[in-house]
Image 1 (tube, helix red, strand yellow):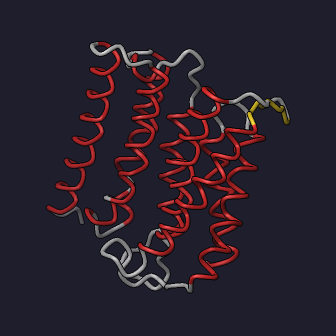
Image 2: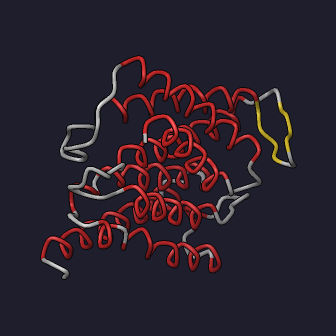
Length: 235
């Protein structure tokens, strides 16, 4: 049954998303910030909201509703180009994939209050996309001098190194800090050596997935590849 906490969570989630989009539009239209940067702002902001979802909802079925809704909403925005802050010169359906993969990972991993809860692994995998992919794109576009191409996807060595480095930190912090917190109160904990090993392996998987993914599809491949490695090692 849908309770008051669900309505509060939905209101907060949709209000946050609207505020994030309005901020990006103002920065783009009024302040002249390039769409490539405002798109990354929305990308990071949406990814960080995954930390709030387990705090707002007590059931995964209602908790994934906002992100599932944004699969459709982002598809409309992508087709109509209504949000200029998301309409980069090489815009792809990545925002649709992002909402879809968050929905899928939370539906698969998140079981609040259960010993089967693996939301920490889902969040760790999504942080590689939230932070690793965002920084890789920014550094690669600005400083990428050594280009390479795999399966038609063009990347830079500088961007891939950034992806790996940021992903190691993102995964490591997630695995070290989230278990036992309000986000995952009964999640298993791991020793430092296990966390470092898993972070390195997960970051390698994330970087490889990003390097070979066709344009925009890295929003699917990066967290899925990372989760696969983390699940095999820790799940």
